Length: 123
Image 1 (spheres, rainbow, N blue to C red):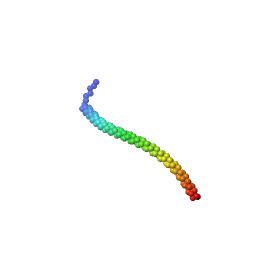
Image 2: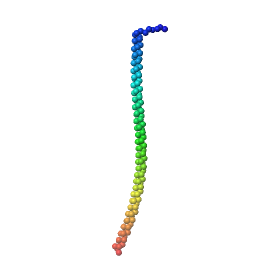
Image 3: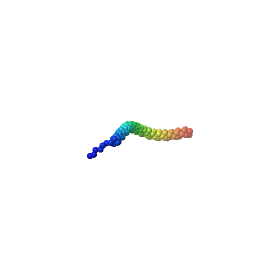
């Protein structure tokens, strides 16, 4: 095996390569640190977004529950109003029937009065 002697020019080239390699490693480390910092910030923002989304979902769930409760209340109210309307309709029909009966009695009494008056006028 032959031993090669390093010349000044070869040593300068090696030193230059080592210096470039050190600079590249330093630059790579800085880029890596920046990337890690940006990634941490992104993760933090993502966590905040997830927290906000959870809060929004909770609010939507609460709103849906309130709407369901309101709809249930409206259904109960509508049912009660329908029952009141039906009862009112029955009451109105009963009142109309009684009014007709009273009108018939009145007409009968009126005819009796007329008959009696005719009888008194003839006598």
